[in-house]
Image (cartoon, rainbow, N blue to C red):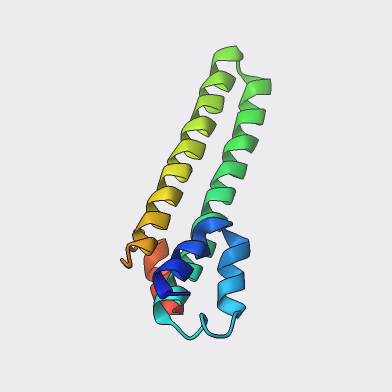
Amino acid sequence: MTDNVAGALCYLLGLITGILFLALAPYNQSKFVRFHAFQSIFFNVFWIALWIVEMILSAILHTILPFGAGLLFALLGLVIWLGGLLIWIFLLYKAYSNEKYMLPVIGALADKQA
């Protein structure tokens, strides 16, 4: 399998495939694949953490404030989910195109680890 396909597959199942490609012998030697594996892991951890914080705030504000505030946070959750989905698809495309696209903070961390 070529590096661009392996790099794209790092994003396919997020944490699972990121960790898998860091463990597989021929792919963990490639700096390109290692970068995309680490970026996939860091991106998914950030996305999940952001989603959890949003859900907690939504639940708290829904019990304290009237109906409108809870609905606004539910819409915020939808925006977070959709934004994460679009970034995920973009990262898949960039890796498959054999490009090393770095997300603002996460990309620098991934580059250090790779």
